[in-house]
Length: 113
Length: 116
Image 1 (cartoon, helix red, strand yellow):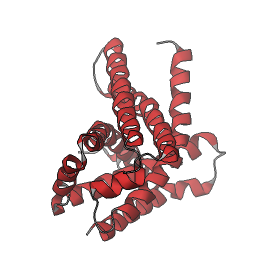
Image 2 (spheres, each protein chain N blue to C red; image 1 turned 45 degrees about the vertical axis):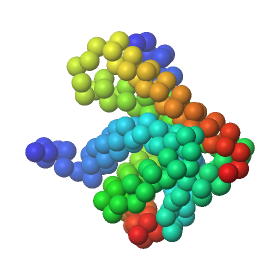
Image 3 (cartoon, each protein chain N blue to C red; image 1 turned 120 degrees about the horizontal axis):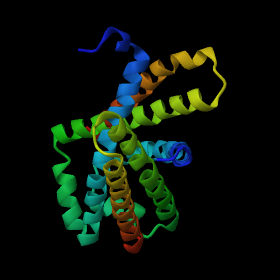
């Protein structure tokens, strides 16, 4: 259960930034390893790309896109909080982060299927 | 760990974040465009292979990742686990080395593929 004092948009923004950061960190070596398959020849990389063509894998990739966009936009929000003078519009940045991340995921899905 | 080192890590995290903000924005746009019609090895190698400008871009991207991700991992481990500071620093340093070596291997590998 999430304690009442934590059930707040900015706490969820913190949690999402942490979860997305950890997930992307784990994914990075996998991503590099798949790219390195190209060095063994096109056929080897094509095997991995064919595997990634399955609908469930594409959905998982869309999830990664959402997390990447959320970490990007959430990170820009943090930089704005830390380095810019406080302005009221910064309160709405959490909603902007959520909207842009969802949009990135949807755009990916529209193009991937 | 001394406050000076903590402050430098915090600053390195923020500087790498600014670099990554640009790189990730470009990368996301690239993914969404490139994934249309499906991906093939020939298409990827044809676009990236042997391209010095893209190798420079992805090289900067990899180095920024190798700075940013391990510092974040270090923060999470020190705040959310009971690991000793020496272990946390060891894990973060090893992770930085893995990201840097694997990333640069991929970048240099594609550069060497010479235009598909």
